[in-house]
Image (cartoon, rainbow, N blue to C red; front, side, top):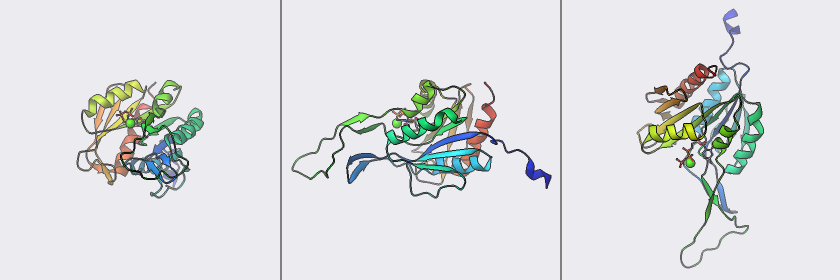
Length: 224
Ligand code: CTP
Ligand code: CA
């Protein structure tokens, strides 16, 4: 019927989404990572496609089914993610950085397996690049969305990140709250906008949360 030809809200929009953890190599058999499952980012990618967007998904997760219709790029380290994101950044309208990027990586990657010895092992870590902060510095027309998973002082830290990284919006959650953790299928988020408006969402599935997040983006992205 003619109702099927109604334009979708993200028709013609290019959306770059990052998801999952990064893995930082120690040696050929070991790495450092975190508990991110990638489910929130994959839900965002799937719902954005349904709303008509062209979606690029840069992911450090590999155990979740890739949503149909997305351009999928699997990465391992924070540096890999940085390189892919920077490649696509100039051509996208929206960036949603739901990935849990490592803040540190081993300063030196052993090329052979590290053998155990008596006594303790010391590993030095160095900072990775803050991808989102770099995007914020080089923002022209892009609508930039960050995530903040905190254990305490959510509002304070989320607002600090919104400002420091020059974001348009940040999605915060308290990972210690039941139903808001890393591996589950639900989340409880609060959305903070650059214009100081705040939207607190109840416990929802990650797909329902994704639809609400995209709704907030659509609402605000025309504002500038
Ligand atoms: N982020 C990023 N690159 C990094 C670290 C974080 O792009 N090297 C992004 C995340 O994808 C997320 C946002 O920045 O969208 C906030 O990440 P978070 O870890 O909460 O903040 P940090 O600035 O790293 O501060 P901290 O971990 O100390 O709370
Ligand atoms: Ca961090």
